[in-house]
Amino acid sequence: MTLIKSISGIRGTIGGKVDEALTPIDAVKFAAAFGTWVKEKSGKSKIIIGRDARPSGEMISNLVTSTLVGLGIDVVDLGLSTTPTVEVAVPAEGAGGGIILTASHNPVQWNALKLLNEKGEFISGADGQEVLELAANDSFSFAEVKDLGKVSFDDTYIAKHIDMVLALPLVDIEAIKTANFKVVIDCVNSTGGISLPPLLRALGVSHVEELYCEPNGQFPHNPEPLPEHLTKISSTLENGSYDLGIVVDPDVDRLALISEDGTPFGEEYTLVAVADYVLSQTKGNTVSNLSSTRALRDVTEKHGATYEAAAVGEVNVVTKMKETDAVIGGEGNGGIIYPELHYGRDALVGIALFLTHLAKFGQPMSRLRASYPNYHISKNKIDLSPEIDVDNVLSTMKEKYKKQPVNTIDGVKIEFDKEWVHLRKSNTEPIIRIYAESESQATAEHLANKIISDIKEIVSN
Image 1: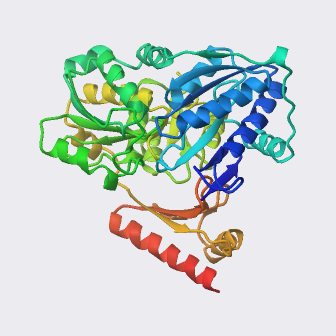
Image 2: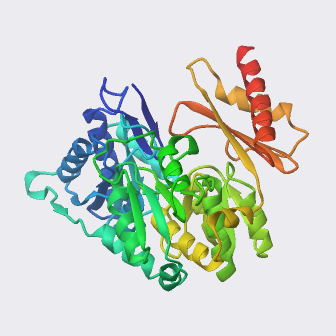
Image 3: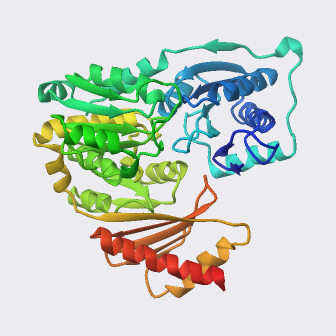
């Protein structure tokens, strides 16, 4: 059993003992802390909630809702929804914050409370620390009976979200209609199944082959949209006459694409392609996190703009985007952040912008992918055990490679000309992530294995 309390929320496996997993007690305590924080921070007594389709979602939603009502907070429940839909609903409803009940790409036994401020953006590190302290100290007081909150239900926000996407100036519906795309989608039996089909219909996509679009929470494969988990959609494309495949994670904030021949476009290149289109139409800068491909930097500089890297985590990318007036940004896991709509990773806006780009490009998707600098990332991880001193590992690696350019704003990133390796402790899982990038998969894996060998040697000593 696992429970991870962090500045970005609380995440854990369902079942087990209190404070060792995401039990009802833990959900109630954390919801009470966040509700208290929202009232103090915003002066508002309204919170938006929504959830993905995983089986524990209804239970956690009921617990969270009742807790917030007990604090005197009105709850607007969007029911089955997407993370970006809840994000746009918070400011639209004038709420003081939002809670998305989703463990994103984690397997079905996980769930989480992801926390939004009154702007519909993930709370900052300082704000998250305040929530953790409120929870640790039981610093909340519940309302008397006459002051209890009320619950309302609103299942219209996915449609409203889609309308917002369609209204964006850079989304060209006529170009997409004219392209007459045939698309296969994999929605991993979660809320992509109720958001992607209506979005694609509204964009004028002529044919949509739906895989795993029933929002029952029974994930048919590992829900993280990595190539090794997407064999069904890849084989469907390979054996059919389709233009592309679209894959989302359970809460629809990550977007992975498959080319017409069944080969992955590359999660890293979702942002690269969308940024290429946006920068061709709009002057401005770009941001991604330290673990994302340098291809975004190359494309950004091609358009005469400036690229900046942020620490891993959506809130860090958003902060850097605001500092640098970035017009597009995100993370290399397929997370597109387009501030023209809102400051949050959003697969729906990513789909609309990418389809516009592909329609205007006028050639098969594999050729679009071939038009970008070709880098390869090797993504690895080391499971953490209690005796591993991660801070010592990172500081030792920094010292070992001090002759190379080293960035320490988030773990340790070491650059070797056009190659790099980034190692950091995950905020969401008990692991160290080791990402390495080079101009071939073999050299990226060689670099990653060298660093992993270094880490194992440090740990053994």
